[in-house]
Each structure stands twice: as C-alpha cells, then as structure tokens.
Amino acid sequence: MANRIQINKEFVDIMPQDYLDLVESGTYETPNRGWKDFGTATELIAEHSLCAGCPESIAFRHIMASIPNPEDTVMVGSTGCTSLVFPMIAVHNIHSLFGNQNAIATGLKRALAVRFPDRVKDVIVLAGDGATVDIGLDMTLQSWFRKERFTTICFDNELYANTGGQESGLMQKGFLAKMAPVGKRFEKVRLPEIARESGCDYVAIMTASKPSLVEKVIKQAVLIAREVGPTYIQIYTPCILEIGKQSMEGLQEMRTSEAPGERFKFREFISPEAQSFLDGLAEKKKAEKIATTT
Amino acid sequence: MYNVAEVNAEACVAQKGCRLCIMYCPEANCIQMDMKNMKAVIVEARCKGCELCVVVCDAAKHNAIKMVAR
Image (tube, rainbow over all chains, first blue to last red; front, side, top):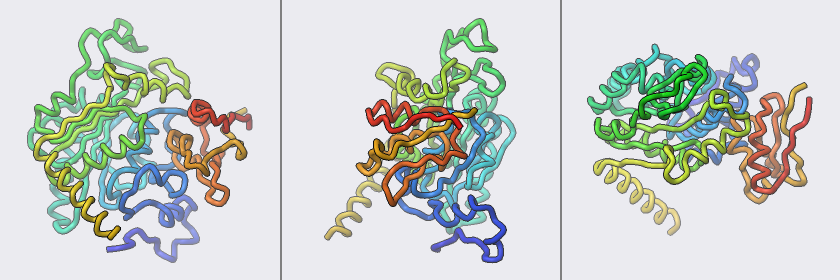
C-alpha cells in the first residue's frame, strides 16, 4: 500500500509550509530510515519547547528518526518534559495520566490487533523516570509480567526535572538536588535488572551520545516487541539545568557517564527467543543482499 | 540580543561526509544540508543558541561554526 501519506489537493494552499514539507519529504514508508536522513529529509519532530541544548531532545530526534514504520506507530507519553514534545511530533500519540502509560499501551496494543488484524501496528511508550519507576512502577511491571508486546523507553534524567529537581527512584545515591538538599539515601533502582527478571525479552541501558547505537537499539527493540515480547530501553538524558551544566555541556556529560565502569555503560540483555529472532532477521538480510548483488 | 550559530562554508567539510553538527543539534530541522554546495546551513529561526554544534565541530578540529549575535 504505497503512498498512504497524502494531502487533499483542496487543502494545499491553506496548509502551513511545515505540513507540506512533511508530506513532501517526511520519511514515512521509507525502509532503512535512520539518523542519516537528518539534514536532507524533513524530521518527524519540529520546534519543540525543550531548553536549549537539552540532551533529551537529542535522544528524541534520534528515536523519531529510527522507529521502523512511523505511519503505523502509536506513541504513548506521560507527564514530564517528554509531554512538552509530544504535541510537536508527526506520529500518532496519546498523553496518559501520570504513571498510567503502560496500562494505556496495553489496551491500545490489544485494540489495534483487533481493529487491524492484517496490519503491523507498533506501540511505543516513552516516559520519564518519574512516570516509569516511581509513580507508574505498578503499571510498568504488570505489563511486563503479562508479556505485553510493546516497547517501553525510559528517559532517565535521575530526578524530577520540570518541577524543580526532586528526588526520584533512579537518582544516584548521595546526589544533592535543588529540592532534595539532604542527598539521596538509597541506591539507584536497578530497573534494567528488574526488567530482565520480569519477563522483558530485550533490555538495554545507554546514553544518547551515539546516534547509530540508539538507532540500532530502537529498531531491535521495536522489532522484538512486534514478534517476541516486551522490551525496555533506559536512556540517560541528563537535565543540564538541574545538575548545574551549561547548554553545550550535555553531550560531554553523557559521554562521561557511559565510560567503562560508570552507571550508564552500554549493556543489553537479549533473551534466547529474541536472539534467535534477531539471527533469523540477519540471515534474511544477508540473503537479500546476495540476491541483489548477483 | 540573541546568539545563533553560523557556518563558515569554506571551513565546513560536509562534502567529505561530516555530519557532526547535524547529528548532535538538539533542534529538529535546524541544521540542513545544502545539497548543491554540500555544506551545512543553519536555519536561524530554529536555532536556540546552545552551542553544541560549536563544541562538536571544534572537537573534530574543523572550527567551522561560530556564534553570532542577532
């Protein structure tokens, strides 16, 4: 079904230029889309209201460029800085109550399977660490226990950023924030390990400093969620304002935190079922490549 | 006064495949590729002046971007 993204000819003269650009050069229905489209194609995110230099917006751009089929994807968001971006993305999305995102995604995924039995529909949850780990931990864990087939992405900035810097479950031990002056007394919640034990078939923890790695992980996670089971990605997106950095220092902060031995060193867990699925995909790709070259 | 980034087209090495500033800019559709001249171009209306592009460009020793007042 080619060219599903079209504009009614009657509307061409009254729609804003940004909209026309999206229809014209947005990367819908494009196989092998990725960050390489940056600069030449219109991105599926525009003019968001996050702070200048916010690492979260870098991560958001890379994710929007990597999701395998944006025209058949529904994203579920929650309260936080991410909810400032959701109105500005060109993919169907739902804003849920704070913490409810995985419960909503569960119902949505099941309803889409009934409504569109012959079409692949992806559901992606994207929420901050407060929604995923503190307020919505119940819904997050229950969706993994039930093996619901969608991807959960957590933007981990290690505190409640847009309410002034309160302590969150993913904050490091001993960290002082503006609204947590005593310092955190407990360890950072080990959600990747919890996710693995709760039934996720693919778990990754990383920062947003390497676009190609983000692209690879997001694609794997969405494809595994389609066929095998729940997937979880935790991305470090530091809040430069709350940790006292300048706008241009966010990238260095991410690189420092992913050094060997640091808390965001890239780790991934792939279950045996997911691994055999990925191997199958790689073999298929190889066979296609040989078929095209010979 | 508001600071925005400006690309020096002579120093920019985008024709050799460099996409550093385009990759790391936090704003979407802000740094575009001029496919005719193969150089990076800043869309000033979208630039928030964070200087991340300057940092990555300087780190790669291209020194092609600087901040200008508007």
